[in-house]
Image 1: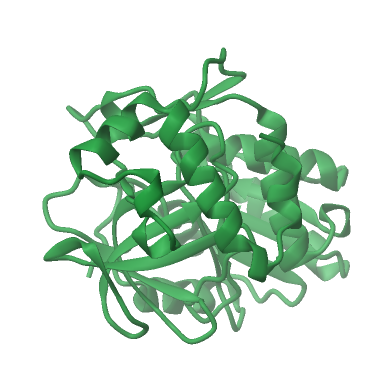
Image 2 (image 1 turned 45 degrees about the horizontal axis):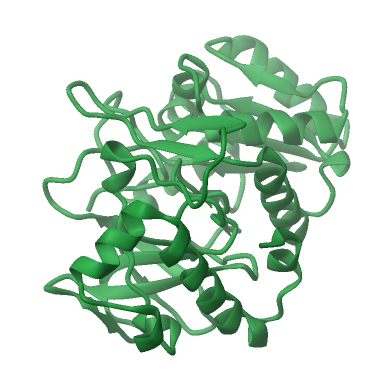
Length: 324
């Protein structure tokens, strides 16, 4: 299947393309095929995207979720927690991932070359296989700004760089994991005018979990900005959603969110109702495009969505999830 049409599909074409990919993955993905057969769902029965089975995300921990036979160009893995198996995403073509995140970034923020991109992602840099580090590294390269780059624990150096760049009128994008951004504003105060702060979520057990409103209030005060942006992505996806400061995420055209009933995972809920987050990511062409996450959320008018927390007893993972 040619992946380029994924990124040119219009909203009117999304449903038919999703159904085509469903049939392709039903035939070529052993794990997904077995799961669908267990539910007694066959392709000829599925005429709407709401009827497509969504694979529980936990399968990425215990199975190789691959459509077709290929040697992976990259294997992305989640951080997991002590005693928990990490998720692994076998990526057939890194060019597909690049096409997805670069197009999405340009949709929401414009060209990377318009920014100096700084990254504060210590917990991700300290391990291998992070899809977030892969994405941000490519964005930094595409930016081409000589002052861009990653910071591990050099908070003083980062603070100096941030103040100088912002004062010079440079458009800056600081991408950081939540606990590290909190550490930074506890040690340094800012009054930024030309900088976008983007949190990627996750306390990683370093700090107490907090609701998004509390986190953003602290960060807004600490950085001296009026809005905190957010990125919503995860190891098991090749696409991301972004919030530009109101806590509501928007997807690129090839990604969509549906909400399932927590008591009946095969039933979908309307706008405004809270439930489990199902994600259609058409860029997951060579793994599975239909993922039932462990996140709780709800849809709003205009197909934007909000993340409310996680299901009880699910393992913690740093992908922009704030516990209630």
